[in-house]
Length: 303
Ligand SMILES: [Zn+2]
Ligand SMILES: [Zn+2]
Image (tube, rainbow, N blue to C red; front, side):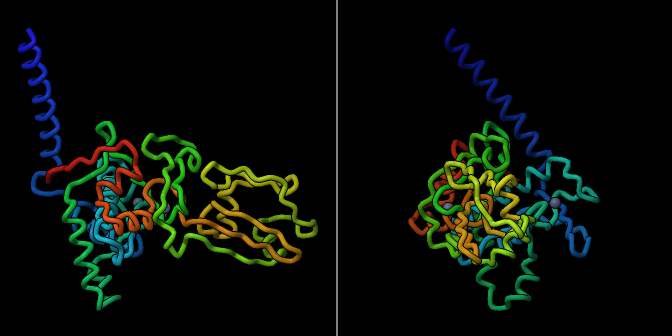
């Protein structure tokens, strides 16, 4: 009886493996091509995914970062790309992705990059090594590709996705990050005149500026701030003042205002400077990804 059950379970697993493989072969036999919309020239190019990823990692992370950090970035970029590739993204001419950083991911063709930085052949080679060493590796959770969001510098602790975007993902919960203090974006102060500050925020310049109350997440992102009867979100203030992040602290003096920000970016998911710091401590890309995306499974797609 027990043996029969084992055989049955084995057959189910085998059938599932064949089904997964059939899907993978359908999409990937002979390699996987990505259709990229270049928004500047409004041109479409088809290129092998790994070649496309070299251009994404070159554009998204400094090539001087540790190899393991670049590998982690490559896995994020691949996961993002495949997620867009298999979903209707609304790009013209059925492009999978575009090079607009406000819509998809940044991309710079290695040839164009070398034209701009002729001495940086090493950078292209290093990034290509990172991409090829992780060929096919993607981040999954319960069999689905995750949303592999990342940012420059979290400032000591990453943020919950629910606090920033209002939706919760188990793998996008804030985690401590003790490795990004060397980032140039770790802490910045903007000194600005009172009049300019009020003008940028659309506040009444005739009234004295008084901060009523501030609501922040436990990780320091400002959610709401009140100036008298005017209530703004931290995101609105960040946009109006062009702050690097919504983790900020405002000090009002007589004629000036000092705005101190911690970190750069939304703070959710992988922290790039933190990833580099972890790599400097000897952690590999798998350990880095498992730290910033809790509970995930790394899966290698064969193509
Ligand atoms: Zn796009
Ligand atoms: Zn960090």
